[in-house]
Length: 328
Image (cartoon, rainbow, N blue to C red; front, side, top):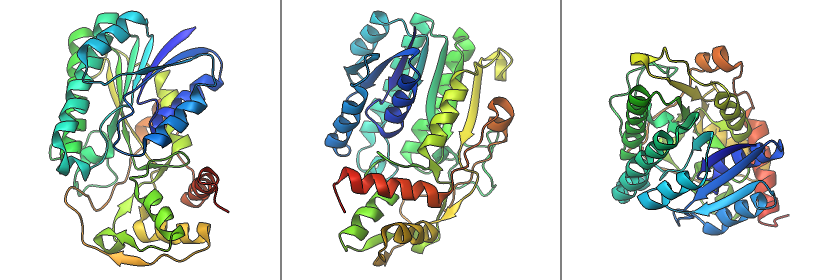
């Protein structure tokens, strides 16, 4: 059976990807995670409990920055494919704890690249981010746009990952694909994301904080669409004719349909049957006014584009949230 490593397996996207891979019954999945306390560890453990019901799943607890642990992981298992989703996430948190981003997103990614090189992995797929586009005035954001001006350390580490990956692909002919995700949401999501915070606050009759006075736009992308994109890209190994003869490719995975923050809030109010009390605030450092994905390459190469409407995706999240928290 094909053996796949998924890093960040207890995380939001990693959990959903592992579940999807295991459901097809033709692969063995090794899930790596350090279960850090950036957000509720109980939620991460609950995701893992779902995965550990599959015989073909093995969990390894280790930190990406632990070079010996990652070397041992690659030596112990012969992975055909690696999907690297683990990272220190969050734009605002990068202002508070920059060292966490260097250790996880830079040092940790180097250890993954070295593991893939040493063990001759057939395909590495890694998570980048729409944050690499910064304050680009050109919309929609296209893969060949200039992304040399990040506005947060988080974005800078993701851009660095793309450069590191291209270098390794060029030097060692490792097939590598990077995915720039656009504001992923859905069941089992992250408590630090706006849609989760808003849901929690509305249900508890607390005010919600609305940055940039609600004039921000985000290309909200439903998690099932993201997973379908990852699955299709995993099967599409880059050919040797990439930039500088590297077996390297980048894709945007976004809904290609930006939603204004106030529209998100109004949709949540409808789903919850309650009105939000809003506290209007200015733009926060590191934030960008809009994100908007050009997904032409994704459509052309793998025949897929995300398309779940925000009303459908948010209702599914709200239904899950209420069930998870045993709310009426």
